[in-house]
Image (cartoon, rainbow, N blue to C red; front, top):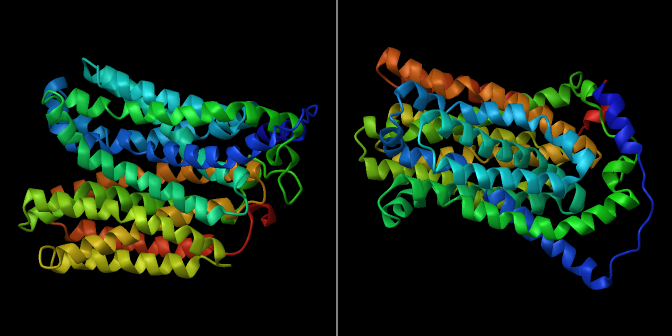
Length: 425
C-alpha cells in the first residue's frame, strides 16, 4: 500500500512556474543553511533541559519515581512512533512545510509543558514537543540530500554540531536560567520554546521557493538526481543494509543514553564530587559539537565507513574499561573517550544520507533506521539501572555495554559498505 502510494506521489509532476529572480536564487542557499542550523539546535533541548531540573520538577508536580523513570524512555518511543509519519507528510506537503509544523509543535509543547499543573499534562505536552523533534530527526538527512547533494558531509557536520551545541546549552544553562528567572523550574524549562519559535522563521521564508520547486518537479518527485524511483518501504524491510543501519543506530543511541544518563552516577559512586561529575558529563556532550562537525565530511569521502566506526567503537571500549578499573583516577580521559565514542551519531546520519540514491529514498531510510533504532535503545538505560541495583556495583552494567559496543562495531562495519539500499533484494 505504501509502495503504490509513494510511487504515485513520486511520479506526480506539476506545471512549470517562472524562475525566481537572481537575488532570490542567491539568497536561498544561505536561508537553507541558517534554517538547517537553527532547526538542528532545537532538536535536543526538550530532552537535555529536563535532567538538571528533574528534582524540582518532581517536587513541583508531585511526580513519583516510576513516572520520573518513564521520562527516560518516552523520548525514544516518541521518536520511533512519530518519525514514521515524516516521509509520507513530506511527500504530500513538502519538506519545509512539514518542518515548520514540527518546529511549531516543538515550540508549543515546550511552552505548554512549563505551564503544566499536573503530571499527566506534563507528559502530554512533552509528547507534543517530542513529536516535533521526531519529525526533525527524520527530515534532517533528507534536507541535506535535497538541498545540498554535493556538500553532504559538510552540511551533515553543520547540523550535527548545532544539535550537540543545543544539547550542551540546554544541559548547562537550564538551572542558571531557572535561578535567574525567579528561582523556579518553569521559566528555566519554558525558555527553550523561544529558540524553537525563532527556528520556524527561516523555513517560513523558504516556503514560497519550496512550493515553486515542487511545481517544477524537485529531485524527490523525479526519483532523485541518479534517476529511478525512490526505494519503497516494503523493500527496506528486506534490505540487509537498511537493517544494519537501524541496528547500528539503535546501539549507538543506547550507548549515548547510558553514558549521558548514568556516567555522573558512576563517577559520584567512585568518589567524584557532584559538580565535577556534572562537568565530566558536559565534556561527554560537548565533544559532539566540534568532532561532529569534522567527522561527517571525512565519512562522506570514505568508500567504506567501517574503519571509522571501528575507531570510534574502540574509544568506547577503552572508556568503559577505564570506568571499570579506575573511574576516578582517569575520569577526564574516560569522559573524552566516551564523548568520542558518542560521535558515532553524526557518522550514522552521514551513512543514512549515502545509502540511498534519492531524497525520497533517504526519507524512507531515515524513518526506517531511526524508528527501529530508537525502539532498540529503549531498554538499555533501564537495564543498566536494574543491573546496578541488583548487583550493587557497576561491573555488570559496564560488561553489558562492552558487549553491546562489540556488536555495534560489527554491525556498523556492515552498514558502512559502499552500497545503496536500492541494490539490495
